[in-house]
Image (cartoon, rainbow, N blue to C red; front, top):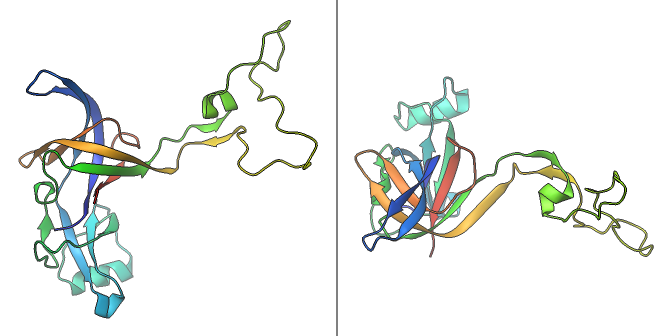
Length: 206
């Protein structure tokens, strides 16, 4: 089939294993995704399967023409490409369900956009400790010295205040705890990046 899937992040909850162990999981909605294009080495230079997910009100002319040519009656929000696995043939216009890609016990990676925290100081952004409290100083949460006189500039990568969050992040080595075909849901161990109802890419680990 394909090497990954697009899910919509839900709430975190807990489940219990058969031996009574409690596991924190993230419940994600995994609706079927539509195959819109199959890329080949001869034509495109690489092999991949392009899928569409989400719904929007209006399409641009280029995307609408592409989907009408493929005889697909859909207004997708986004497109995504995955590697094609050689275990099963895929046709344009077909639906791919979550149970055909993942099974219980699979090890996966979750990639999403983290929550935006705005402008943050070094204590919140990097976990710095506070300065010693002396006579109600206004420098308690300041970062302190940022370097010596040489080289006379701020070294690249220096931990300082700045924009926090709203970046692409991948959490690795997560486990698929349950796959429900009837409700189109998947339970993944631990927490995954992103806010509620955000799109997250779940990829198989080779």
